[in-house]
Image 1 (tube, helix red, strand yellow):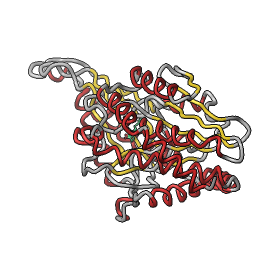
Image 2 (spheres, helix red, strand yellow):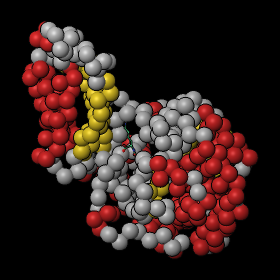
Image 3 (cartoon, helix red, strand yellow):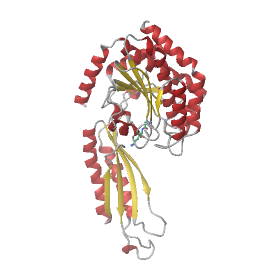
Image 4 (cartoon, protein in one colour):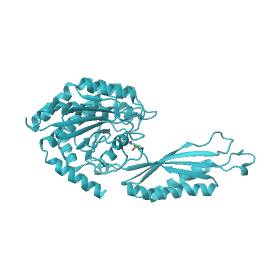
Length: 398
Ligand SMILES: NCCCC[C@H](NC(=O)CCN)C(=O)O
């Protein structure tokens, strides 16, 4: 069968399941679950994939991770990634219900044609928890789950179509100031105000922002600012995210931020403890493989998905994802696809849009484009050599 016929057959498989896929997505959207607690999503996704004939490993390495496999060993191993965690307070404001749906739909589409290829193909749909906080993919990477994968793909809903979204390496900084409680209207001089230290720290970082390099970002919150207006706060805590193009740049940014943190302690006489979380919550920048991205762009274009023409939008670099870490261990792509909305991700309006029937064709198109991209590579296995060379070059230049 020609690649074009395989693509048509795979797309038809998605279209045939469109109504069930919408129900699946709705089930996740209506029941938002936070990082590592995505029990219901795990259940419905694994049940769905099992019904579709996948060999499913539930609770794969992590309680709410899964692996659903079809095909055979001995040839290419394609991995399609699902995310399904929600955000505190605003539900699926990042549209991960659609990411999960796209992952499953892509899996169905590739499975439909898996026996039609000239060589064996193995397909894994990988369920990865806790993208928004915690970095589920990093635990799976550490456990060797991507070791025999040739390439990995997923797609993320957004406000624009951006095939090669560049996202940043990120690290979390936690800061605690300790002072001395006292009455703020009586013996004020006996107090040491930890809230003043927190406010100064926050302001120092705001001032630093003007001097930061483009694409360096620091933003955060005061998590605990004290307990009562008439007690000088003796302890406060802050949490910041620091982002930069690469891990090396992130290190430089860390140094500047440490100056802001420590100077606030000196100015107020507080003690300070701080730590950069060098654990699974630390995400690498995203490397979009050129060959995979080019194939995806061509396929998406055929389906009427055109990349946003505004270079100021497509050239923007922002946000972070643990898919970044995946693209440092295997070649991958992570296109952003537009829903019909102006709303920003992580907003209530985006939550609403991610649950509409109106958004469905946009999600299903992505699944078709990802499956078509995999079909291109499987039908021209020599492309894999180029993909591997690019991958090594990208890592070396990172
Ligand atoms: N450890 C912090 C992770 C933050 C990840 C988050 N990701 C997104 O918003 C994009 C995709 N969901 C972020 O960039 O803030």
